[in-house]
Length: 62
Image (cartoon, rainbow, N blue to C red; front, side, top):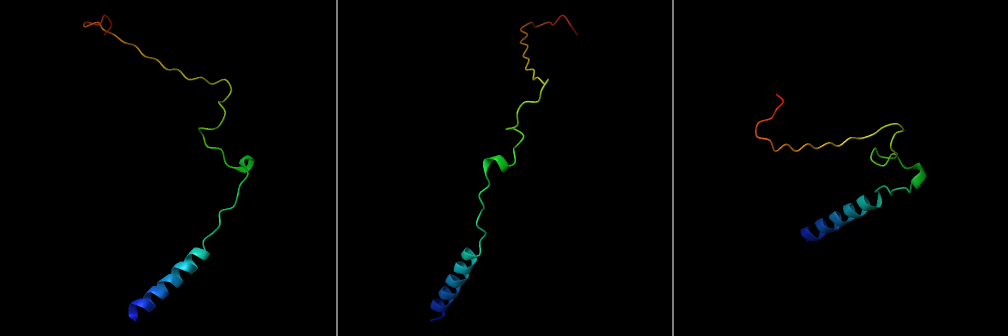
């Protein structure tokens, strides 16, 4: 009997907890915040990638 009443109380608590959860509101894409990776590239800016492979055992420049 104690288990049955405990399960009923637990079920009632879980049901009320689920019913009080906030429903997420829809935000149109135009109003959503834009993350830094999705922003357009700034004007007059550039990125440089460089790689230098040296196979000389005794480098000339120190």
